[in-house]
Length: 276
Length: 269
Image (tube, rainbow over all chains, first blue to last red; front, side, top):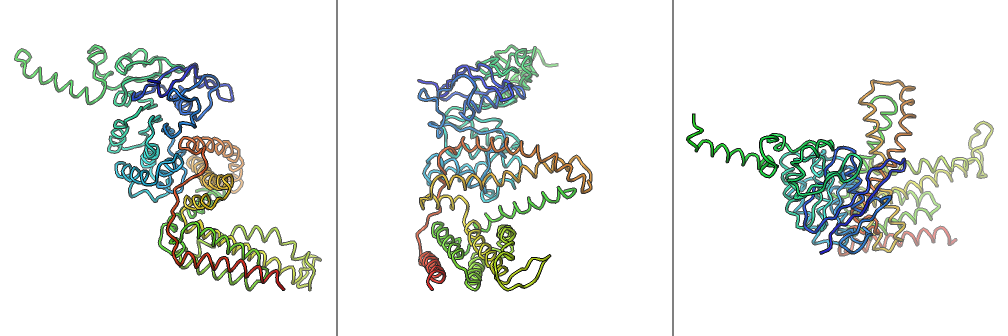
């Protein structure tokens, strides 16, 4: 099966000559859960824009679904969420923003209404639908932006820091919505804890804008030297168990670390040789 | 906000909020809100056309009364309607002001050796009044109909796509423009104490260049956000189409009759 996104030797230079992305090659298969991580200014957002067909790379190509290099032809299948919700919410009301994508991309009114009502209920936006976006708090804007990109049900999600200022409660809801998405998900984030929660595969964008590593989440997220070399902080459980556990038994998420500790403590308490 | 510049921006931001508040008026229940957006758009544009055709002050005033009645029956606060409609006629009055002296007639007063004529004053007043009433009628469309419905109505009425596109994008960017300015001034105020008039204007000059660059950058990012959700395609928002009732037909007929009557009064002796 053709990859949903196949990028070859992508390079992007700003007009002032700064190289934001250098010779990036990657291929994303259908249904993959990928986290693209990197330090601030490494070029993650530029990579997202290039993969989403929203900036023209200085060199290289992106092929979508094995069919075309023109992102506009598959725009209804690509859900690109930009980093700043203030850029993303440009309509007069939240409802108009949620309707914008489905209307522009040809979703039927009935299907869009149903989906928007469901998303609004799940993300606590129902009472905010007729408010202008600028009246929302930071977290509310972020939730509205996430709902806007999910509203037209794209096959591939390219989400740049989707949790932003979202509080703990809705962070979990957003995580569930993204996790339950049936298509392909790419999350661009500097947080390796988030990458550990969401992704099976992790791509590290190095500080020179090139791909520094690309592999299974466990292999990349437990490679502490690689992460630190690229200005990244390993996930909290990896920092906790660094030097204590081997990479293949290292818990990557807080929930996995908790399970591990509960199991270990339970084993110790049931072992008479460890009882004082 | 501190200083003259800060206060000026606060006023602009206040006006911006008033425009956004229009969406709440559009969501309320009233005569024009219950009309099919296509009928509303065509009828009010027709009335505005009739106002532009007419040259009689009494007829223009009659259209003004119609505008007020429509606003009152559509839960549009008159103060908001006047606030939204005032700027354009004021600018128009400024532009046509020389006509008060250039149009021949009986001299009313003499200002620095220039005679202001009765015909000239009548022309300036009549022109400003016509522009004011016309703009107020068009403002009623946006005040009583969600903007996406106005755009959808224009598309259904086969208004050229390029024109709809320009109107839709301008409307969106206008808010972002002021939003960016307000952010910039807030950032400035958070790091300054009260500044005098000269200090405020010095800051304003400094901010102007940054504002231009930031607005361009923001425009680019919002453009990407639009493209990410199909913005490269012609605007096609969901309409608020509804079955036309007798009030829709009545409004459309009245508008058509107003255009014909205004034409007859003007062109048939």
